[in-house]
Image (cartoon, rainbow over all chains, first blue to last red; front, side, top):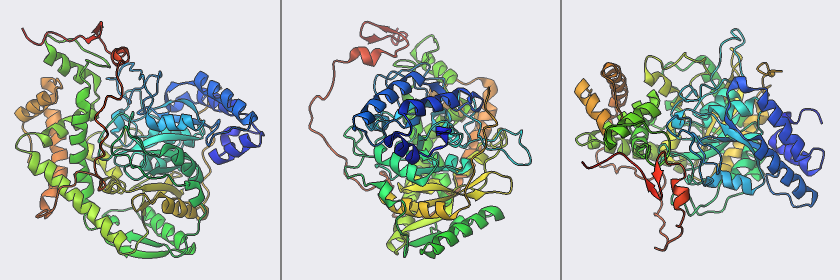
Length: 496
Length: 95
């Protein structure tokens, strides 16, 4: 078989099943691709021996007709998921060489279903960032380049930048990611890949390093909608160790791919047509609506009046929760430690040395909005506005809309160093279309919609009702069928 | 609302993050930029609105109050920067 890294996850699954390809060959092809692609800086830790050992077991299982749903499929794991016996960093120096003695529930689910894990993928530090530039392990480079400016290093989005870049560069068939304000969907949109953030509670958060616990959700990034459906089915499910995980059956999401979208009502929220929206993004959005209409869906204008307050609300709630969650990094139980005269100075020096600037900034904002005298004015008010944002969606769905269509991001990917260096808020605006979904706990998927004039991918977002990921997979597949086929970049970055 | 340099120092201490004097002015600017950005929430009418504390309406699940694991002190201490027997070691807390 010609280069097996060019197969989709579903195609690789079928090739393994029909024995056109062995799991060891498939794993080795990806290991070779990774070893030649270090210029992209996608992986923090590579685990080739582990992947090959898993692949050998997969070949044995396939031979005796005992294949599991993801048997022998090589995946990457965002380095926010704890991996038993493998260094886990969260993209931060503060965890030092932390090596969990346990496996996160979601990655354990993937292993249970037969996946081969190739290693731990780079990310923004503690998943705080939109460009993968805050990682203590250096920025990830996207395989995509601007047509007119091929030397500029393009960001893969964030925080799941290692995941999106590795999937787009064909270093793994799919990758786990996490999304607190857009960290699955924005990197997917920036790299021409598919990323779904499922409903809050669909996947267990246990063993995933916490950022903002009321917003964090796990999900996959893949090259096709079908692949995302296959991966999510394995990742999702109830976990007694996460009280917010939902005890409900996991549907066969793959069956929803290809289902008719005839008669579906798709809401187009007028508030998303923000001031200064580029003509290119507006045209993409119109094309997305036209594709769904051609597939038999009905497009209706809706109103989500509190949209413009979502990002400011997020920048109170997420840092508040982060400041609490990150209090555990104190140089006592794990990670690095700086010496101090007393325990307090030890904490302060350890945290100053271990956290990067963006994480320090968010902890400080979170501490401030939770501090005595400001709690009601900031934090409680933000929680009330969050209720209003959620109510907007509830009312839209109650009016008979099945899903909402928006652009995924306000622009294409940018180059390293281009955004946020003077004003942190400039970087935050990347999440303006995605963050509402986390606020309301809803599922959202980013799906490629073609290329912009600069040669970089553009993504559309579909937002669904709680626990109705199936409708999103059907609609995303309809867009995937209608949109211009994206040719992933040729491997200009490979060495040797 | 905006913060002054004394407040920046106070927040840093509450956050248990050491900061250099030379950092205070820059941090003040960055924190104030974020606070100015979120200031827009003050214009929202939230009269009578309940704060959202759970992303989805759900009952907190409870399990039987029984021991479910334990006896893994070695695992718990495995990543400690400094340990002695089954204890985490920290600098002296009380003189």
